[in-house]
Image (cartoon, rainbow, N blue to C red; front, side, top):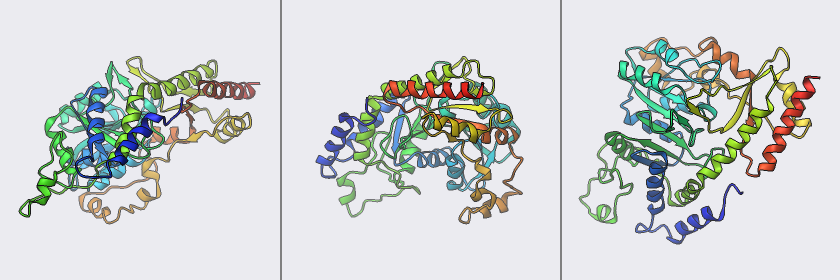
Length: 396
């Protein structure tokens, strides 16, 4: 199996054959959106240029505005917190569970204030949080729930696919994700009003676009009296070439996700009888999509760097560390927000510093992220065998 097949190439070629003429452009993106909504069992899907723009527009559609607070987890790539700043709002960090590594309703509730407008819940490494408790809390406090499912294609919570529980959901097609077109993303929702806002805000605020219409027509733009922009919007639309590649990947998604889940299962099996490597806990009601296989190392027994070095010596692929916690990145420590720091200064005493999320701070330096994107099952088995060999070496 190959990451990119002839199917993706044929769709991209079809888009290029259209010479980017207005009459032929956006057809593949339209097909992608329809197929993606069907695959994820949602009513609406809107394609984007990348998976950070998706989060930004999801926040705008949810009504997040100047000075609002949005609760986010710190243990993830920083795009959720950055998207909050893009929306001129204030990121507020809630701690995570020590077993699942995920944001929880109890930690979210500690951070809710009168300014709280939304929460972004991240399905980290391919595992969804406890969505029932989060949705109940959000309903109680009238805040929007945005799923960040960039790492959770076909993951499930109580039988429901990622992307269909929160008010709005965001997917990324960046190169490391389950399906990719290099860059790209998708927003899903079951709410018609939110879907229309997402479509309009991502398309320069054009009045003529709609739920199933992502571009204005030639008849529209040739009229000298045509009024285009009904509301402030951004140009976050996906091109048809990218859409063609994504469409091909979507049609192969079960195969692509299946390869990662197979690798995840092999790695999990390799950890049997190891008391100093603890895998991310998967609750019984969840189905893990294994964007990565992640385990916490007991650094009192074996250090992170020592384990990684020995794994590589035995032929293992590189092990990734967890991202630096978002609020400990230099940008947040120095509040280098291109002027948006003034929003925080006007709104209250907001500080990003050590100690905000103790559990996340304890977890982050001890997480080992193993790749699962092995398209040859023999390669996945080989890496799992090397993992087992490495564990046995330290257990001598």
